Length: 252
Image (cartoon, rainbow, N blue to C red; front, side, top):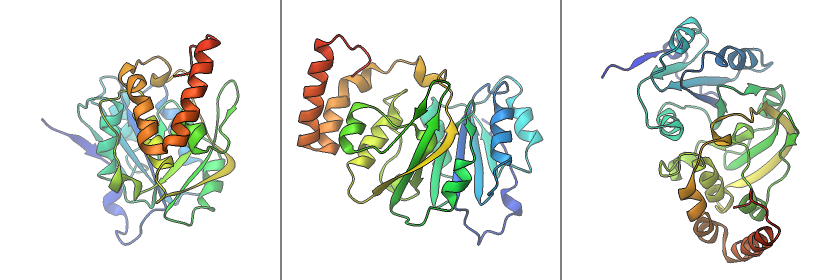
């Protein structure tokens, strides 16, 4: 099997490590990718690298990657087993001190560049907020709040050390990023710092909005108990019982 690949990485000074590795995974994304790339290239700060992992698109995505070859640090295209398989592949190529994952149908906002001025502690997970068509989604998350709902990965700057301990679990095709956040928020080795900046515009119609992940919903309580501790687990179970009694279907 031949892997298509390209990018401008070979022209960079290998002694210079980018501050952030910005990762996008794509599949048949030619309808949204140009706008996403524009939002990246127009950032006021450019001390980041851009890595795109494609799942062997059959539309015009590959031609777009070739068109922007000089602006993308590294890209490759080959079949994969889904979004998180592609993200795990990307981790083999990142060189930044922090990693941020962006969907091809999302857009970076200027808060991304502002956050780059704040990143300084390599053991800290910095996270901001996302804007959707409906609301500003974000705020400061405690371990208990993470047990109730996930945080948009489009606003999270993970230290690269995170991925020396954890990778995306392919058993969970929709909520593997949620599992990663549960693991991180339960890991005392990483500080978590919320910065009230709008990092990205998050498309509510992405894969996570319609994909099913019954396996994660079944195992979520076990993960909360394992990684977030007994006290958070008990509070979560009480909140879950209350939601069931109120007929709230979205809480799991």
